[in-house]
Length: 278
Image (cartoon, rainbow, N blue to C red; front, side):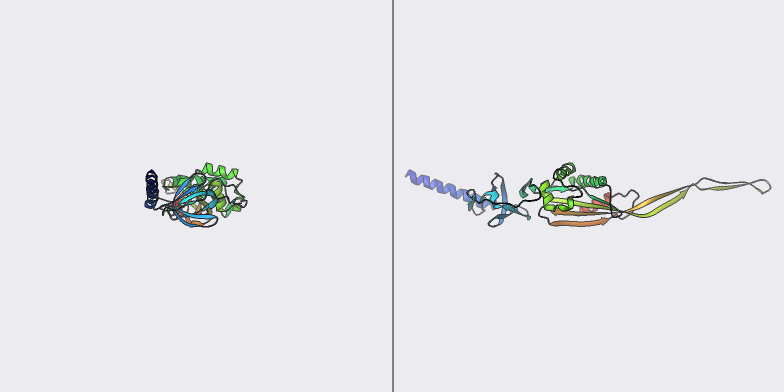
């Protein structure tokens, strides 16, 4: 009799557990490092698992060797803990410092490229634009984690990613170095426009004597001022950690300026990017 009672209780416990999973309507993926991911598993291949976080649409590919168990929303459990298959990954040009799941909703901003009349300009202006972009998005990117420029630049330098070598790294390489899902890259282009000039303070006077003859003629001092006008264009690209470009926009300032300010066109393109929130 006691044996039947124990079997009955075990049956109820198992049924309740399965029912609890079903009501959640989410798949659960447990990684070998103990991390638990909840969402929807789209497909499972011999080497990879394609996964979508709950409430999102972006697909993430996770190596099967990094997964210990899957609990499907139906209650079915797949246990990979006993999988002894050793996967040899090809040597990559950069070190992986974060897994794709740890990249989630993290943004890095690269130092901008600054061009003056299509020639490489001062590196300091590109870093200043990077900082201005960080300051603006920090106020308008709810739900995202933006890496501060100092941390970004330090990680790039330590990985050997200089401005001269940047072209040799893909956006996936940079995302792996920085541990981010999104990479923002920008260019500021200044071009000399027309010169403006003005003359002020000029005056003249003629003084005559009682007989109507000219006694004295004087011309007051005058000053002239000229200023160089600049046309400014800002170009912005945003990439994901799978090398996919999700945004590319360019905007030229409506009016030329004498100081070459890029703030107005920069904010214009940032307000229209998919990472911006009011």
